[in-house]
Amino acid sequence: MAITASTVPRGPVTAKINFNERPAPGVVAFNYVDKPPAGQPQRNLPVAVHDVTIIDVRGRESEYTLDRDAFQIVQGLPPSAEETGSGSGFTDDASITANYYPEVEKLLLDNIPGSNRVFIFDHTIRRAGPDAPRRAVLMAHIDQTPYSAEKRVRRHLGDDAEELLKGRYRIVNVWRTLNKNPVEATPLAFASSSSLNDEDVIPVEHRYPEGYIGQTAAIAYNPDQKWHYLSGMTGDERLLLECFDSEGTKDNSGVAGGRLPHTAFEDPRTRPDAEGRESIEIRALVFGP
Ligand code: OGA
Ligand code: FE
Image 1 (cartoon, rainbow, N blue to C red):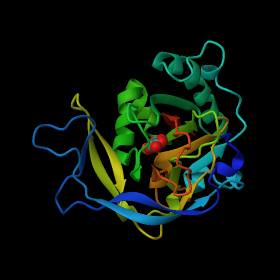
Image 2 (image 1 turned 30 degrees about the horizontal axis):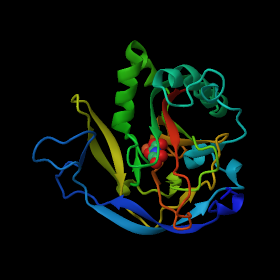
Image 3 (image 1 turned 90 degrees about the horizontal axis):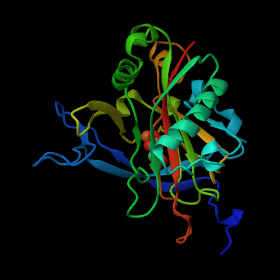
């Protein structure tokens, strides 16, 4: 069957989102990135599933800004060098780094007022199907906390870190679909940062096999949270997800302060034979002004 616009779910929807519950007092929440040590579970936070109304921001894309909402949409981009000419089609990490990273760096500098330096530290490709090494994440979370954001700056910026930490620094994910057609399955939802209560952000130790301990945040459900998605995302669109902003952690700054909760969700309107969602997210430190 040909894919037409009518098979793409659009508009507001009620769907299940997976949240976590807070740990018992004194218990450190953790998550092992690979196999846990013998006798330990993969993660120790209870899961809580809630029905959530998710609003479609399609048609109102330009109303949202990083400073106020901690998410922003960029549209009408030309094809990446990674998907034309000698690019690997987002299959080879070195090629992605060579072709796509510089494009994302420019995108961030062009779209974040006052930004003057970008350092991309990671990317993740997600594909559908049981054999995919990384798949969509069906759990509300924020990739970093203030602790791990500062740690990232020190880890990657070396001698410049101390000076850079005195200015404004943010962590922004740049998310795009790799599907040829508009996304029909497992879209990404994100809750406006201003609707998030600090008490519903649960720090989680993110334990890597080589011993490095990062910190992410799990999210407890709260009916005040306002969840959004962008229906039928296409390859010429980018979603900027701000995970941390040093400016917003200062009192009365009037900015959202990053900390954008996000998660993939199964849309109950998605037709059973819809193409699985494929995507790449870039993680970047953004400095300035
Ligand atoms: C992210 C993220 C999950 C997904 O971009 O940080 O959590 O399913 N993505 O794409
Ligand atoms: Fe994430």
